[in-house]
Length: 322
Image (cartoon, rainbow, N blue to C red; front, side):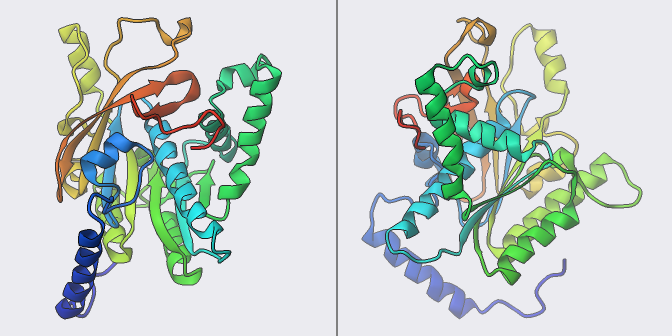
């Protein structure tokens, strides 16, 4: 992917920026970015940016996919609801790319998150009649999001194929892609001959950053953390929070990111998941932000629902809507 061959029209850029500033001034307190579905995260960041590479790091089973799906589904529902009232066909869409999960698993998680019925109960046939009906209605509700939420899942995928998916949506279908989610970076093939993991991850991080800038689309990319954090925790007898240095495989992941989020579920003194734990404390650490504040966001994680929510203002309703 090459750089533009012509210089930027700075007058046009400044004119567009001034129009946006006028809208910000006319609507004080309103999010300047896109809603994530998590109020506490929106309050810290002002919402998702219109463009940029957002890396989300987390240890295995700490909920990277769950968080990504909450944000993707909430944003898709936001844009789906916007054009319901005017009866027009919307060009807005969210792309969810997951070589890690199958489409069935993604819909299953969506139904579980929105219905608040534990997937374990559904799979074992233990859900009561009301819960079962609510879960089935939530699964059917994915049809409402289908025009906006485009899922590519269940198969190995290369960096070149991700580029093709994005460019087909933007250039061929003329869609307005609001967010691209990739779950997760280490499961994507760089498609390069020779070189090791470091070179492959460096190429992918830099290419996704360029793709984001070129088409002005935010990318939310999940990434593993290094195994060193496990060794550190064993040596200290505790559970230290992750840091930017823990991103797995390449310093380019941290360097290319406009924002870097680190998901951490601190040790809990209460009951374990296997003992029926309903929810537990979780932290989303915004460790890097090129254009705004950094800090920590307190969340609640519901393991049996694979769901993240705000501690005081949950991002779900009992009727199953996000």
